[in-house]
Image 1 (cartoon, rainbow, N blue to C red):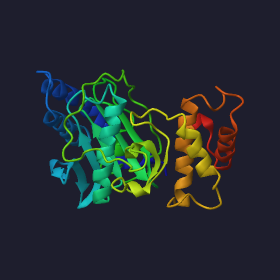
Image 2 (cartoon, one colour):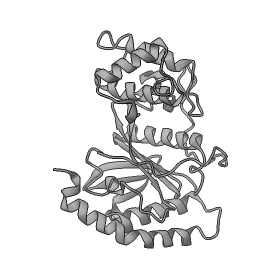
Image 3 (tube, rainbow, N blue to C red):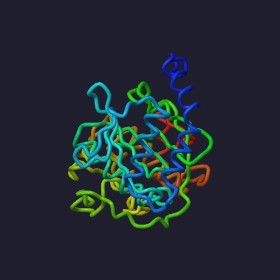
Length: 297
């Protein structure tokens, strides 16, 4: 049965449709002074989860460890949310990466497998699966149009495997003001590569750099064009053979897709490059074996 046939989905959709306009009005009112603090962004998220979605205020716990918000229901913890001051993430991929790094560390500490980051303007959520982050939701909290996929953060949607994700916003640039709100969580770096966790294609535990494998991004989130082909070769030379040390075989498909997405973004794969270099040609062969289309990257 498709999730769209569930009565819980239909009821949630009715609630979202009826509550979105009121949420936008509350959000504008909370931001009317300008230069609001992180606390205001937290309040906006509380409005979202309790007036648009179907969580109760008691389901939102604040300052659990270093986590800004932990969303739970019937004692089960479902989501760690890292919150930044309004507008600090929407323009900056590096700021978003830093927020995700914090959320991932707090989630791994508490054995929670879903994370989200928000500045009261955008909301991004992802599942931690086999050392990778798999998109769950991109939501523009400023839009008149209701963000597609809010159901996946509802009481009855959050524990289900996400079946569809639509990009709800794009970065306007990288000119956001520096984020100075990190709380007791200085960026943890790999001792050899001096890179944070988001730069690696696999991370078994965001708090343990020894589990971070295959660096392929720069610290600012851009693709490292020198390390990317090395990461691909290190992975695929052992594909269905000896494993990269500490790398579970079940994680391989997600890692392949992540590296392939980076390769596609740099124009190394068809259709932008009809004659890929050997490493990328091998990558294409493995994508085909795994049933992953380049159109899905």
